[in-house]
Length: 182
Image 1 (cartoon, rainbow, N blue to C red):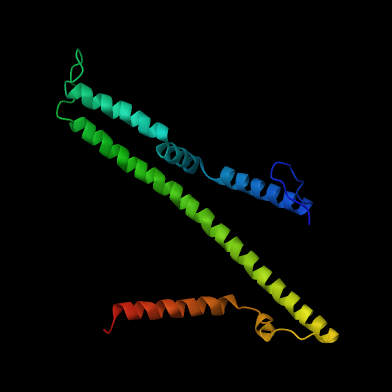
Image 2 (image 1 turned 30 degrees about the vertical axis):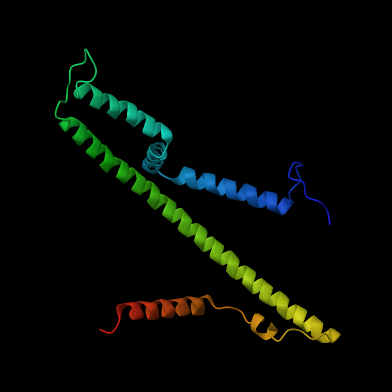
């Protein structure tokens, strides 16, 4: 087998290159499709989650406190009771919360779509593998090679509905056990 060196750039297969290009283009289309309000909310949320946001607040609110506490000479307090600081910080917290929630909602929609795609690919892969196992089992049978006793189970397609129903049953059983007798 060949030796893989991370320092040497290895060409990717055309299929992989196509998939990468398709994913990047799709992500860009999704980004462009979002409205101006969603893009603005995402930018505000990104900035609010940065160290620069912390620095700006340390300077702004720190200066506000120093001036109004009378700790800076030749500066007259403009908010000696810190009422305006309290109102400003509260309003900022409310708005930042809304911006973050808007961004999280958008991210949740994208994550749900990605999960759906992942599920579809997994189901397709499972079906294809089942078909390959069936084919290999037939080839082994023709060649007189004995296989594993588990092959019959592996040759059965998995029904997503049955899996989801079984998960629901288990979750319901656990919930009822946690709640105890009524």
